[in-house]
Length: 131
Length: 507
Image (tube, rainbow over all chains, first blue to last red; front, top):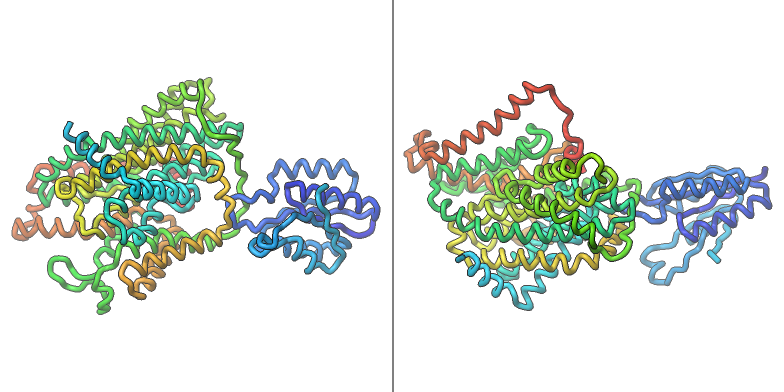
């Protein structure tokens, strides 16, 4: 057992791609996986915040993969900070995030969680796209 | 059928391109805010009141009518998809509606709500057309003492029947009455509660109070509880429409809901909570034990939704015929009448009949537009729920400040807005209902006027307040309304308060 891999996960194809790569990487490194699902919690509905059903599906597929794992859901002012905080806390050796395509204007208005994680992380970051 | 002729005249007046445009804007704005929990029709009308200063009275009312019905409909969308009733009147809709949505029947639930609202609204408005002139004819004969008695009745009923705590209701009512006192006394021009401030002596504008308590109070409350776990939304799943069996099962509840809702809206104790509750219980009983109730029965959505729109229509009877508002939205509309220099009351139907009939006609038009626009737009409204609150409330605060400033164009009103915003926040914190406060601010001065009138007729004799038979009867009803629940609660063992109502007051 060496190191911990933190995954920024959302209940969509981007999150699924990130988890898939994190599990593959964890097998290579024989590391454990911490899945972080965060929300700003300032809208009535946030599609990227996983429902209890989604979490159950994720947990069962992670259990099947045989990699030691943990799933955390949190709420705070900034989604990227929540992922980085967990990475600090568990001493992550790698952070995996899913990238979504953003137009320059979209990025200006909505910001980019992946970009803030890339800039703020103290460990290597693996950015993946859904195939 | 004189009423129908007048209504036809109103329809002709309302059917211009420009008026239809205002109706469309009203319906869309109303639904927009109705969908968002916490922002009700009263707040929207209050926010948009200053926007209409530049409009003709008729156009302003056409828009308000659209907002009113739109917001009523919007509330049902949130109840069904999110299980979060935006309005106290859609609490009952949420029970079966959300279960239908969870079973993938959200489209049918939305459709029965929309069509039921349309049918109930149309029947209700037609009843207003016949009842309001009749009531106004009687009301012209009512003297100051009886009018005072009816006002007291409205206040007592709204305060003690609605909401879970009578004490909280009366606290809010007296806060409102006190705010209504500030400024120059209307009959002797003495300055009251103005603390030597000439700006306060000018009386406090109702727009400032309403926008402060509703909009600013709500914004502060939301800011204090900014981060909440996102809710699970059910997808609309296609275009809302009703077919075959669903339609057959909806007819009865629609008509029964209308019959229950209208009278409750029309008596000065209004509110949609009681009739929606009764409608739900009735449908449940009629459906029998082996029904779908508890698992998402369409009857449980159709009935309460029809009841709440019928009661919304019913509130126009006392508003137009007596100048008595019984809901927060009706109170703000009354303030809108006043801002156009139109004194509501029994004379309204005769002095400004063209305006009244245009308003009633535009209610019918708004109702139809609602059905035409909103059935196809339902999935779009559901997207609105993803808007982050900071963006939303920044917009609301902008309109709130603009509205408070535009009322009199003086910065002092912005200070007052902050004060009332803080008051609104505290009222939410301590679960004080807002309606009695607004009613107190608006009806208080009117009540005082009638009180003084009655006393000056009788040369200051207190007996002048009860020298009309109607006044005596109404006071007896007031006494019963206060005494009966008190006695009942003594006789019966104390029962648990309705948790839904309590929740609504807080949220």
